[in-house]
Length: 67
Image 1 (tube, rainbow, N blue to C red):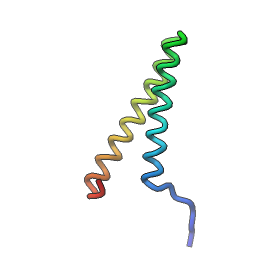
Image 2 (image 1 turned 180 degrees about the horizontal axis):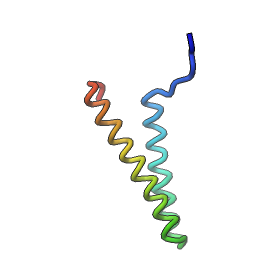
Image 3 (image 1 turned 180 degrees about the vertical axis):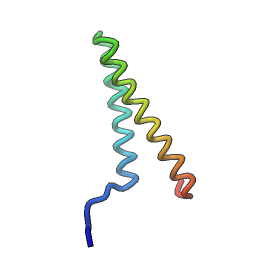
Image 4 (image 1 turned 60 degrees about the vertical axis):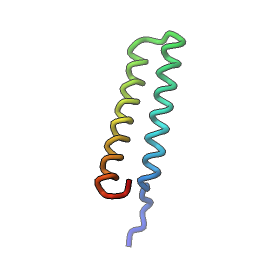
């Protein structure tokens, strides 16, 4: 009987949405203050990866009949 703390799907979604929002804000800030293109691109890649993970989660929930 192992009662380890498992992350709920809604908790993962909240985390992914937070990552998307923060990385997009960091991307805009990096562009606005003139940081290098690589810094901005890194934040952009993180946002895209999190967005793909959100879409994948949406498709999986919809296929399972939960969405």
